[in-house]
Image (tube, rainbow, N blue to C red; front, top):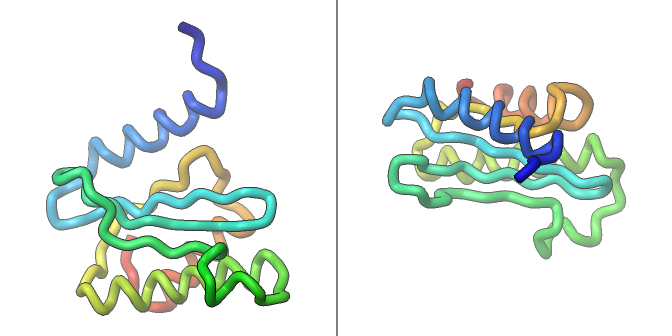
Length: 117
């Protein structure tokens, strides 16, 4: 079965992150579309999602801001949730997306709010 390019990219990046992952860190997986952005903190050992934040949640649904500002807001929200659960160190899994634009702004905002990766 032939796998297309985007699926191969996602597997390549995610597998590199999982190989170096240790038990004291979780994986921060990001996904974006043309309008929205979402992220999850995943425990790969137990195969569970610990936290998630998205731009399609009810409190962010009606906001009229551009996409970069929206990614900053979602990153701040995720960082606040992570601090409540005492999650500081994570691995950043960018998936098929380049570390550029909204993904880069998302990562920098998380770093400013106390997350380490």
